[in-house]
Length: 224
Image 1: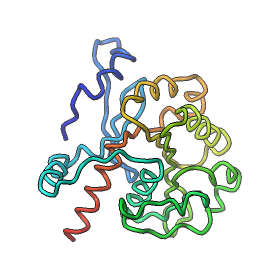
Image 2: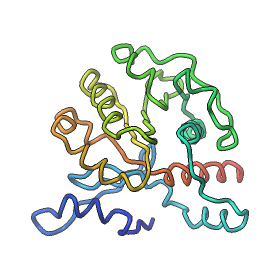
Image 3: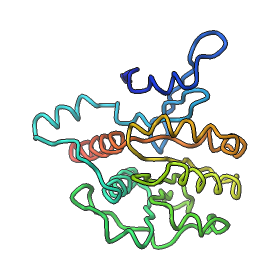
């Protein structure tokens, strides 16, 4: 895996090194995606960096271009990724007719949310994409697509979930444009996010991460 420093330079500059002059980073392979953890900054999805050369070849050979994605298209891709990984997919009822099936293979929507989410049902029903573990009736990942809305609005929703239901084993993802990565770091570093534990469980996805991850999984599926 090769992660260009230039893509995270602004993040490193915003937090500074540890006392020994080094930046502390770790890579975690999770069911919800491969994460780059930067101490004092947060978690960043780097799934698309695996096999990125293969995606470049796909782009070159087929003329595929990295598109300018809409909110609904990103929801479609996130749902498609989750479905490929074996999760049930929840999308708010008002958004379901807007899914773009030219971007992702059609998937079925979960008819209801797990009962374990009852204390936060009103919050979760409006979250852009939820991955639910099949057979376990447990939510495993929440995603908010902040296409034109403030990043802090999604973080507030996730923070409420973390405070009200701290026992749930859930990963959180904010999806937005690459140039908003530093804003994500600043907003996630607020004391309330650290107190609730959200700062350790929330990950940043740029649109390229989502698109690349989806294409890699789809290509793998086509290869059998």
